[in-house]
Image 1 (cartoon, rainbow, N blue to C red):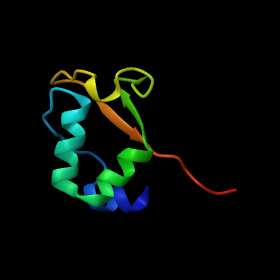
Image 2 (cartoon, helix red, strand yellow):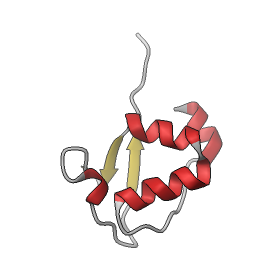
Image 3 (cartoon, rainbow, N blue to C red):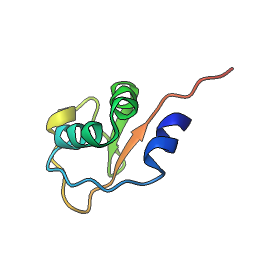
Length: 75
């Protein structure tokens, strides 16, 4: 999502122990654009989708990488 990229930039570092904490911290920091994107995004931790796992309860380590993969539109 271009709007989200404009708001937060290409890379953000947030300290969090779980995906849920990361979402809360991102929402507090970036507001509605972040919150809206997270609701639609596939969340990937170190290359593995956590949507079908315990999404918010997924634990994070200090060197983990989290991607928010947003659906693209078009035709």
